[in-house]
Image (cartoon, rainbow, N blue to C red; front, top):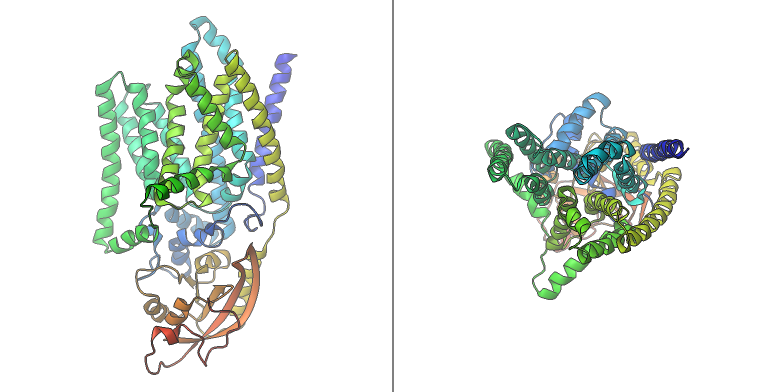
Length: 542
């Protein structure tokens, strides 16, 4: 009877996880959840920005915009995959978001396999030989791996961000694959083959998202720690992996130099550089905000992780704590969390989407801690039981919130983009090209060709003259700097306003017709940045 209940219990649990995972694929054109606690720029810009090379290639026949924002030069893997996807589906936000959700599903599977395999190996080394077979039949590691997947699939934070076509899901998939390869180093007969594959995966991680550099210590630890007793094999494997990664990245940089794209590459890092703290108080404040941002992930599970780590460190002389602290996957997960938090503290820039990486590795660590504590006796087991109660509460609350997000979608952003495109098509002026900060996002949603006005290697006025757009879209108000860039070539005629999203600073999308004019006497910035007589503008200039 017990075995029957256990079997059907696992089946019901897995079915619930699958249903919740499938919910992520519903209503893919819906807005990022309104009134969520995660204020992030990504919901109205980043999907289009990082796919703009693929969008341009299909809409305009070129992937590169001279003088514009070309992130594909620095992070080419995602736009290359999206370009291939658009070759099948056409430019479609449903297709690219569906691809992101599919990657999230892959990450669920990879997390499960990584934890199950690691916990199984650790238990097999701890049990006497006659008990190994019996232990394998009981498979206690299966429920621990399911705990990690359950935390991932029920998280409303991950639900909101996994449905956006961002760079993080691809980078996470490559990182989890690299961890799997790294953990198999010690068991591999031909270490050079595994090292070569690991080097390729690490290079792919960096080409998917440059911040993957801070995850490399976690990968190297997972590969190196099991081989610490075999220094020659360790050095040979690390040398091959490192040389492979360096060679691939060097070849990519050499190709950028030969194609005269190095300026776009360096510009990508320039715009992602923020003012750094200089005083001790500023550094401490930055670290504090970086740690505080973990509460975006989950206000129960992340403090729980910190508390359980304190318990492990307090019991570090016990056998079970020592074995856990020597587990390469557990330490690698903590290194990944620490690396990303340190990156955000150094940058002094915390965006909620960055914490999606922290969330995955934090949940892996929580599952391992729970599995270890519940196998002990006395105080550690009591802590494990309390942790299980906290996890149950978090899962219940998170599931309810995720279901609310999934079953009550809102469509203000896609409706605004479609209405804007329909207006432009109905009032053709011979220049079906939109200038807007969110232009790439609108192009992804509706197929309207667009130019980003926010970033570029050339001054905006020069890019505007070259592109010669017919329309301009702004959020809520007009930026004086953009007025100064537009006025030498165009006057602005405000035509309509569309409600969109829930951000009080970006909840009205304003469309302007750009009217070409022959510039008269060159005026200074103070004049060009103000409303001029030829303009028809009712929104404020701020």
